[in-house]
Image (cartoon, rainbow, N blue to C red; front, top):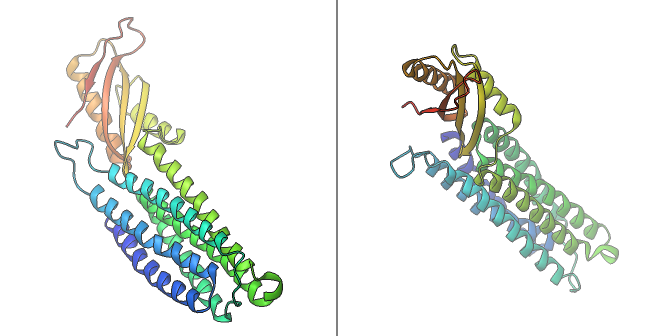
Length: 299
């Protein structure tokens, strides 16, 4: 979690510097595509700030009012980053189209250098954030990584547009504006994707089937477990909370079934670092027609 916050903070500083350089250079050049890409980088500063805030809140331990912890704050900030991206993309696209018919001079050649630098720097940031986002299971950091991926794509589109305009202003003078529009469209679609992914987590969508099989297999390795009838999981920030229905010998005692449930819970938490806690329901195996069950949530 601490590494995630440091990466998000570093991303804020880098995005702020790039935004200043691109906007100032774009106004001097002048270049609509470069200014649009600079505005997108400025949005990255706010996005990384939201991610940093979300990771900070998610690190708080569980309390009486939040028994599942504060992990959803991290997912919620990822959702907000998606909305921010989509909104910024709409604004960038509209601004670029409004200036398509305007008469202006061709951008200066030096307008391409901030774009090249941005593509290189954002490529490095994307790899760093995406790798650690996946490693710690952070939806917000992964969303911020995709935000950097947008910068790479949008920067490339802006670079092509500016390059065409500089190469032949008489034929491609409007290319600079259309490049700004392309940047906006790319940002919109990426924002919608991030919003969709985080919204699914907020709606308690089940994780990948492979993860569910791992939970089942880990539980069935415990002595005394005769089967797993049901297994549910929901993500609360960086980890999952699991509901598990175990089948045990119908003739075993309540004490023995409790001990089996405790061993299953401890083994899953010990071997699967991405599981925060397990609520175990103990039921008699199908040999017994009675389907009464006992729930154990071992603390």
